[in-house]
Image (cartoon, rainbow, N blue to C red; front, side, top):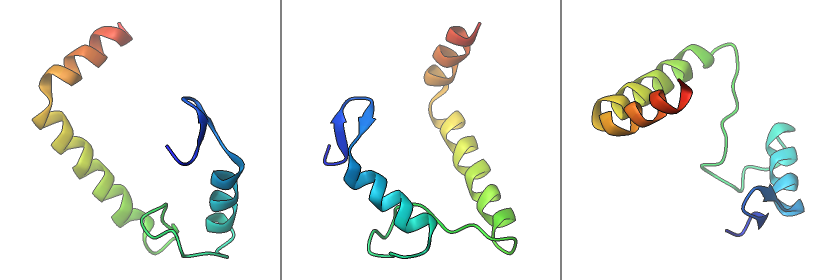
Length: 71
């Protein structure tokens, strides 16, 4: 919970990390975000689709619960 003021608001340190990553000024937070380029976006989107499909297959009750909430 190091990045939160409370459950739904991040603190200024998190804002600094986001700005640094967006501006390519800081790679010290490995695993936080990914620089997307024209060269890598198709692969990243494929990974995300695969991750979503794996979640849907492994958590059918969660998918049903979310679907029910949407309706």
